Image 1 (cartoon, rainbow, N blue to C red):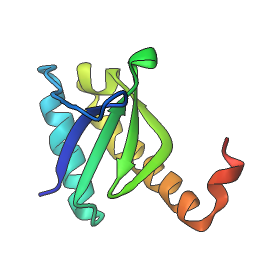
Image 2 (image 1 turned 180 degrees about the vertical axis):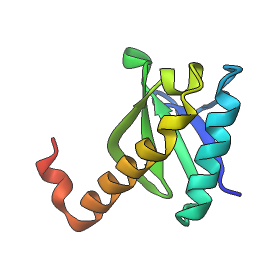
Image 3 (image 1 turned 90 degrees about the vertical axis):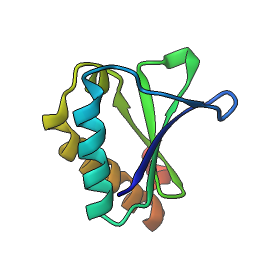
Length: 102
């Protein structure tokens, strides 16, 4: 099963997603990541914009974020689509098209 972690942008320190409704969302993300050959997924939080969790798939940090409410409200039905969008951003980045996304 893939590893899902949360980190603070300021210092890279880990923090836990403690929302009770997040458990199903995290399970769905782990299943998606394993099914798509990503050993780990990291969500980065910037204190200046704490509602956005920036996505890292494997070793690649992306120009893509998932809203905090996905976790706190337990919006597990949106997870597969959100992660597919993140994978699309990762593919654009790998192909060199990310420079047009800014």
